[in-house]
Image 1 (spheres, one colour):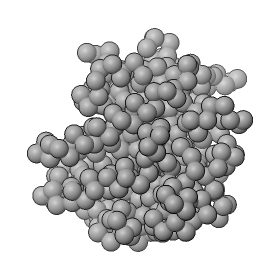
Image 2 (cartoon, rainbow, N blue to C red):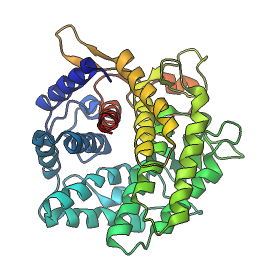
Image 3 (cartoon, rainbow, N blue to C red):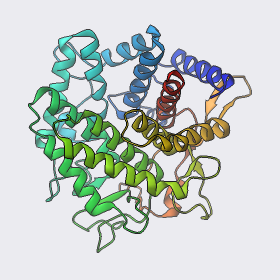
Length: 381
């Protein structure tokens, strides 16, 4: 990584922080477009994770201070969290709480442990499929999305291992096994974005229950879910930990043929030829970060690092640039994609290509910064 890219990223982070607060984060384009007050959400949670990672690698206190102040805007002294409702049953809201482990360890402030306990209660009554997998959200009955594995399982495994005598650890592994069984395509080794156990949704294949395509960011979330859940898995669960690592290696191997010469991946991974498809930042960054972190943790062989580095450099070369006023921007980020809902999201190619492509959005920025911290770590070795 050259000095110019480092300097640009440093300047870019400063720009983001100077123009953001817990009430108005400039990187949360979804909330800005909705015109609503900010609330507890995974988009900001990913940015806070990135800032804490930057603090870890650089030692710069301002990253930790910003992250803590941001979280403290929501987390109250009694452990309740402003705007968070357990009964919403949304797996996305679990992810943000993963930052509380770090803050609790760093500060020993009991409110963070109380907040962790509070969020953990959501999983006790979270709706599940007949096979035992969490629904992605209460509003999506019987549906499993790859995104949800990242949103919930690393938190779940970490909490159970640290605070609950490992009671739910096998449940976590079982949910990954359900995904492997139901959502993995045997031909490519890739995983479909969504799965409807009931086969009732219009986007679901009547035989397999799967959505039609391989959406890049969902594969990125899933790859990172495997890394971070494996990291949270105690070594006493030897075979379970290796199972997650094997699943990760299989997924990364499946992605190799679809990596563009630029280093990036396409919005719909296996359809580079499709009109309207494009090289997308957030999913590429997630895959880059997952690979580089997995190599560092020795979950993947060192040879895979070149793939992760190529993906990171591809993003920096293509999408990290300057505006006319001299400020930096990160572009090429799919704002949002899902299945079902009011807008009849059908999982088709046309659908995935139709969603807005934006800049400076945390679903792309945070993974890019996380991949950057792994690039820095590699320079230290």
